[in-house]
Length: 228
Image 1: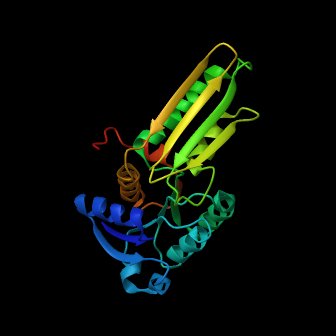
Image 2 (image 1 turned 90 degrees about the horizontal axis):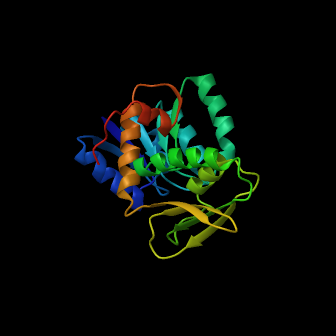
């Protein structure tokens, strides 16, 4: 499969390595200094583009890829308010997008666990839902997209989210239910960015040849076993 990378920072480099290890070809690399390459033959030859950039540029990058006829896997967070409009454009124009607030297989299993725990906790208002998310100092959005997804899935009237930015932490998310008598807690801690990159490449493999809007939940529903 031919892959184009939109965003060639730390994540872009790791995605490239994972893609090559899985036998794919990276045909184009676009960063902030060469956005004119969206119009290049190399970019148009890609089966799928993988986008990890900034909240300010993600939507425009997706549209630029669509104009070149290339479907997009997007892992940028902090711009979700624009998703409804992009979904409409996608339906009107027969394009393809798979967006996720987190591509880690483990985090997506954590999402499922979080939803189930929220269902169990809902009849017990004495428990207060709280969350802590910890990321590296370079992360631009706070709270993280993963934390926003977790909070949305909890569905409690108020979920306190504490955001911490320190060092080079890849990502830690802690969901806690606290009462006067006890505390229930679930936690996911990423050991490196490789899990995110691996999931993004899996998403690209899944999206190739498809049209429409997709999620990691649909991808995992089609993967019986995934070797990390």
